[in-house]
Every structure is written in structure tokens, then in C-alpha cells.
Length: 177
Image (tube, rainbow, N blue to C red; front, side, top):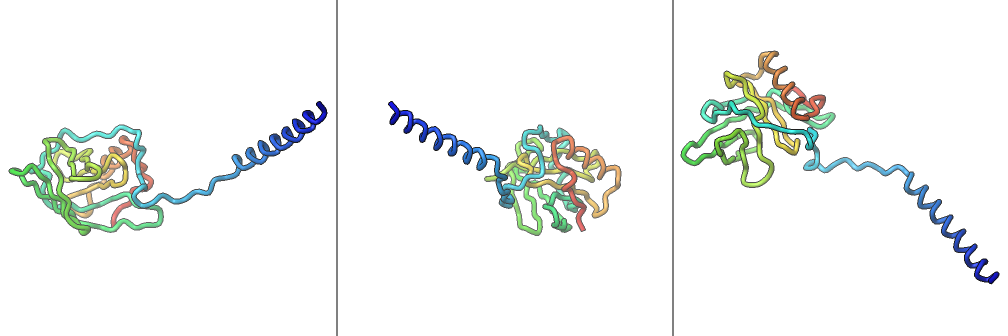
């Protein structure tokens, strides 16, 4: 019986030691790894996001200036001009920017769907189709567009409020230069 008590005592000591070491390891800080560029998001993905009911692809077509976009800390937001074309017979919208062209399926809503990847949602456009807010549900891409490089302050403020409403971190929204 003393042998059993001795073995039990030794096992208890090892078990208690293992639990203490495990507890200390569990309390140690976990090093953070910056997310891969494709994992970066600028909005709370659990927040609702909506598409404007005011969308008209014919009025949306034309040249737009990217006046603000979401960028990582330390990055600058480069100015870009986007050309939008609506191909009515094919129900497609083609967006051409400095990175190249992207074709989206148009189904009568302000949710533009590429062949693969996130849909592009037009969340808001003002009545005159002069300022627009676009982004992806994942929050990887978000823009404020305007027909002119320097939009009116009231429309820029309204666009920023729309982004906040849909869960975007507007502290990371930068005016383009």
C-alpha cells in the first residue's frame, strides 16, 4: 500500500507541475502576426450593408474620381480616375481603373457581381449622380467617388456618414492626393 501511495504521490506532483506549466503557457501573450493583404478589412463584417435603390446604370456610367479610399496605416491614397461603362444588351457594367478592367454582372440592383470574388455594392449615390459610395461586404475595398476631383463638403460628409452607418472604420478612410 505504501508503494501505491508513493506512486500516487509522485503522479500527483507531476500532474500539479504539468498543470502549473500549462497554466503559465496559457497566460503568455500570443505574438500578433499582421494579416495578409487579402485578409485586411476596413469594416465590421457582422454589420449590415445595403445597396441604394436609387441606382441607375445609365446615369452611373461615365468618369469618376476616387476622392477617398480605405488604406492601411502609413499608406497614401493615390488618386485614380475610374471609367464606368454600362453594356445594356449584355447586362454588364465594366469598370476601368489604373489596375485594369473589371466586368460585373448587372441584375437590376446596385449589387454588381464579378465572375469571382466579392460583389461591389453601391451603397449610396446622391440625387444628381455626382457622388457615390462603393464597397465590398467583406470590407476589403471601399471608395468615395465623385465626378470632380474635389467634391462639395456636404456630399463628402454624407458619403462618410453612409460608410459609418454600414460599419466601416472611417478613421482609415483617406482623401486621395
